[in-house]
Image (cartoon, rainbow, N blue to C red):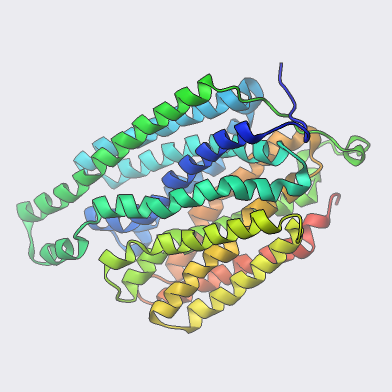
Length: 419
């Protein structure tokens, strides 16, 4: 039978395992920042078309989050995580035939399947780490495992970008004069560069799955507090803090993905060499890492997670205005600093949204993970459509709206526990 983790129990071992999973999540998620300019070259895409990389990856969360909840209900957290890793392996291996044929649709399918697996993993690990100890310090625990996530995000564009975008400026110069078979040969050579990184990724994920299978990872269940137990809630949608929290997740993910995955493309669009811009995502993730460290030190000892969310959203608005009204590297650094603003948003929104859900915790978690889909898949397209090569800074007004809503949730929305 399942085992409920208690606050007084040691959760160091499970936290290390979850940290490994957050590292995996971070590495795979932030490869998108490299894949956007890479596939734009290999498949000869426009800016708008290239951002379908994030749409294919993140929209799988929207479609798979609720089925993920059912899988977790049937198989439990541990087996659900193992299943999720298997699905991500399949998606990663799809990159091999996609590279051989240089078919954008097949690349998108691989990304969608990867996202399917990560949707299941996210649905499992976020409530797990939130409920592994006192809910009041959940943001601190999420920040701890989030360090592994952001370290992976920092090294992901360095590793993958260094491999698949090596000499990209020289290749693009050759493509301007190449035609026919010569162009195909250049594009095919570049496309084949993704084979080995994704084979290695699949092997790593298999080893992680075996490690999880052999580990003693306890099951946890949401516990109802006295108020929840006496309530008349009969539906997960009767919790305003959850419903409004789903929209907060949508806009947070949109802001995070634009700042992380879009910064390299933005740098290229304002005239910075792609050989330099391909590493800009590491700046954003480095800023997020600093934010996570602040969260670990400050929450809940010096600041409550809801107050941290207020300060983060205000900082996001300030950095957005700076990105819009400054030029060159100053605007790039402003985008990178959005990573600092974004760092404590997920760790704060998630526990505030699932607080008091009791038996609806797994379903509520699934709905929050579902919000990742339109956040990464639609908000980013709105940014690309409004900005793009013609007016790249204009797209950041989308970010301003995102941060404004998150500020509303931090001040008002999370406090509502009944309609």
